[in-house]
Length: 500
Image 1 (cartoon, one colour):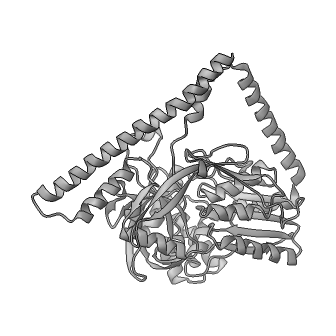
Image 2: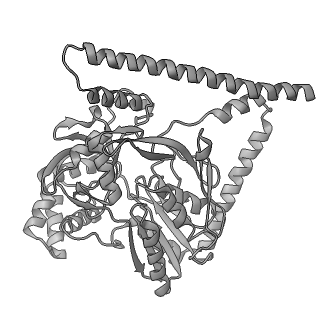
C-alpha cells in the first residue's frame, strides 16, 4: 500500500508539470502563428486594412469560439453600454435580454432568437406589456437569430424620443409587432410597502451596489411599522452584483453559507457566509416569490433562504443562471466579459439551466389555443389601446360594456384577464404601483400563506421532503460500487456555462 501511494504522489507531481510545459509550448506556437498571419494579411490583402479591424475581428472570434454567449469582446459601443448600465442611466427601452443557445433536442435546427429575461419597471418595454420569456424575433425587420446579443442591445438603445420597432413571439405561436419610444432608463433597485395583515412587502428589482442600503432602509421601514411577516418579491429580477446579494442575505440568515463559487482558478473558489448579524428576527415568517424571469443573484438569494429553511418559496421555476462573470477593461474604450466561475447554493447545487424549484407552484393559467388567437386579434386590431384612448379613465360600467362587445365579436378570453388588460393599458403612462392585490395571483397566494395557513407546518413539510430526498440519494450512492477512477474524472468535469 505504501509503495502504491508513493507512486501515485509522484505521478501527481510530475504529470501536471509536463502538461503545463506542453500547454505553454502550444500557447507560444499558436501566438506566433497568429502574429504571422496578422502581419501577412495586413501587408498582402488586396485593399489596405486598418489593424484595429483585424484586432477586433480576432478578439470577437476568440470569444465566440468559447460557445458561451455571455463571454464576449466589448468594442467601443458595447463598452459604453456596460458603463451606462453600471452608472444606472442610459437611453433605451428598458429590457434585460439574453441569447442562450437552445439545448432542447426538439428545437434543433431552429433559429436562436434573443429572449427577454425581464423588463425594467416604469420603462417603455414594461409599459408595452413585454414579459419574461418573450422572444424578440426582429429589430427593425432584422432577424435577431443572426445577431449577437450585444448587437441587439445596441440596436435597442439610442437617443431618448426616438423609436424602434420589434417583433415579439409569446408562447408557441403568438407573434406581434411592438413600437417602443426610447427614454432615459434609470434602473431602480428596491420598492417597499406595508400590506394588510402587518406584512412587509419587499420588491428587489435588481442587485446593484446600492441595493443593500435600499434593502436596509426597507427593513427599517417595516420595523417602524410593526411588521409581523414578510414577502420578498424576486420575480423578473435578472440579478446583478454578487457581493450585493451576499450582503442582503446576511439580513435574514444568522450564519452559514450563502453561496459558493468554484473555478479552475484557485482564487475564484470561495465560500461566502452570512454576516452573523441579521436585522430580521429569526422566527419572522417569510415567503419568497420567484418566476421564470428570476435569474442569477435573485436565484442565489432564493436558494440560500430555501436551503437554510428560512423562507417558503412560491411561484414558477426560476431562469437558471448559475455562473459568474467579470468585466475586464482593455484601455479606456473597450474590454471583455468572461465567465470565471460557477456558483452553488448552500446545499451544493449548481442551478445552471435548471433553476430553483418553488416549494409551491403558483402561476396564472396558460392560455388555450383559442385564447391565444383572441389575444393576437386584440393586439393586431389595437382594440384595447383604442378603447382606452377614447376612455382614458374608464368606469366599471364602461369596461363591462366593452368586454361584452368583445365577447359578442368572438373574443373568448376570460373576463378577469380582459379587465386586467384594460386596467394595465390605462396605467401605461403612470408610475408602476408597488403591488397589485387585485390581479396578482402569486402575491395573493403569498398573503394567504402568511395570514390564513400554518406557516411553521409548511416549512416543516418542506424540510421533511428535503430530508427524504437526501436520504434516498445517499442510499443510492452507497449501493453503487466504489470507482476511484470514475470519481477522479468526474471531479474534473463541469457543466456548460450559461453566463450571468
